[in-house]
Length: 429
Image (tube, rainbow, N blue to C red; front, top):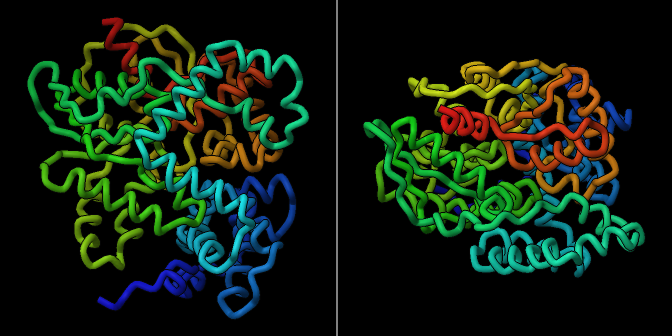
């Protein structure tokens, strides 16, 4: 296998660019085009710009801005009749920018701290979580918000409002443990717990383990696992994402599992694409293919087995928000709805445009807060029309975003993950 040259292979490839016939059917599926009405901020327009750069045009600030404004929601992939892998293209374009453009020092420093030293490090995440818990629990957060100082801090102040609450205890204490099945053991699965989710979605991770256990799974939480690398890949830092992919593959490759499970659709989408991320790595390419084939979203896995029917009633009216990376990236739509409709007492109300992006998109709501909030406000309009008292989704990032939406533009609806509804039903039994 030829030596891997990221300057060539981490840029948009001609064979991928050539699939686009510029028909424009993607336009209405694109949140940024619908909001900004600019061809350059549509999938077709961005691909046109990628072609120009591929043919030798310079990487300008304008090009960087249009590529950066993309949510990478991949709604255009669902709409595209030509099978354009736009998610692959936009990540490649961002990687090309990363490899060829010298960013300002402060930007490089911040990206290095977040993507190389925080997210992949369990120790650093623990420290950050402890500091955030002090800030949130000591009254300092309330004082900061009440003082109005956040209004003077620009994007940083807006980002603070979106910061997730740190749950105690965290899920880190469960990493490295094995949880036996409840009843007959039918499956042996590995659960990848994520990075920030260990701090802010510890209860969701615990609910995921319980639901898997009650459905005959022995659940292994691999001790050597790390952040999946999705956020690094989305930011164009593909070499960093590869490092984390290799760690996760090594953490599981010596053991046999029926499935590898994720409860985060954004993470799962990247985890399933490890074979693409490492396709030019002679030592990991084959192992990455095996890993990707075994990756399952938790809703996908549960909907594929004979689900334990011993549930109690959950008397609530819910609506379901499709996570972009589950619906458009992993092509999973029916499984979450199937599971919800199996819960006794639950009333399901389908919302209009359920698969249009809520504006979360990884860290998009932090770096492009204003546009993200405009998309969220429109999403909440469709949620409110259902009269549902609980919004259900399948991705922690969407949950954080929708909680903000429920407070600002909704009626204070609760926001839950699909497995949390199932966990509630099993506990009610």
